[in-house]
Length: 483
Image (cartoon, rainbow, N blue to C red; front, side):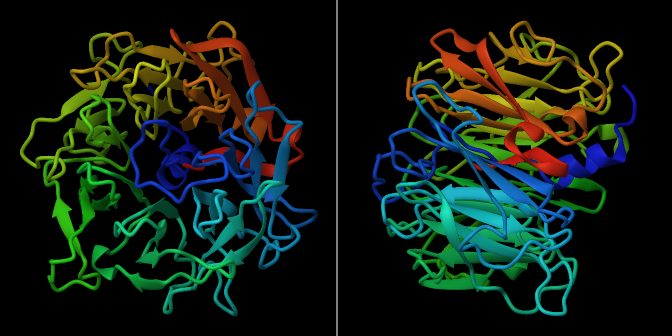
């Protein structure tokens, strides 16, 4: 396996989708109009938001856009969509060169009106005379879908080109029944406590500066108490996937850090650069699934496997036991298709959902650097199935653009699997797979495969390119898909 292109390394390092899905455990939001989280228009079907952070807006290059595809009994299509930019009516700010609106996203009902809202990061938004600071916008859900928006309070002292808003996660972090938001980027991590007003004002907000430089975050319930824990993976010298810890709500904790109602729990033997929380063994506790996609020989993973790996740390009433022996799965694990090769970046994107409706969370794993035949970095997605014994390689399925029934064809640098999202879009009780090919035709595309009792089916698979959803420019369409 060859060295992957620098642009692919950048994409996987900074734009991995931190995605959850059906059975991905997180704290409950307020009751939505449809009763479904992620339903922006309240019609009873979950929807999917896809980032295009390098899309041109008119003559403004790389200003960024978000494409929302609305679910229905027949899934999604380009005919039922919304494209939102910072030039859209009611959205604060304006489309400016290299803002990268849509670089990161997360969904939740923040104002308790029964519709899911979308939190969107503009990674390099300029603030005043400071370039590349970054900002956060909430797009509000309603009967007609997402429209209008408000900015969240901007932390003071952010550095230029710091990329604030690189990572976003939502969940009920303090157990009060309201959804909260956490945002991170290079030198700052912030916590916004809900509920939020339509002006974007939270009940309170504060920094979490003890973490240092972080770019990623994801959240879910590791302890079964219906309160979400926050996981902030970040690298250390000599091991870019070397520090995994999470914050759990602990009102009795008065340690000397800025958020005294939370305790930080370290997992000293865990590695990963991204992840998702889901109940893969159906014991009522969320399990921590980490993607450690670096290769040991390049210094990006001290304990990893060639081509990348994922590890599963099983949850419990006190969260994952730091001394447990985690489940390790890679492309040389029994039952997993393919084989580990340098630069595959297996685990660069992860999502959880019940693909076959058996009640166990399954995991979709992107490997956008996978070579197939003579096609370099064409990419694959592997689906691993949950069971009473946890996540295993048994029955695992691998998909590429050469899989029978999948639209398109394997091409060099497609990066199929750069993002993944498992979500039930057609309300049949099985999660569908939405996956991005970040460099398809130079500007990106998504493929949607529907879930069934026997797993994913390629029958009727949908392919939508950036041009097919009216995006212009390089686009980077589908580098990110909202959790």
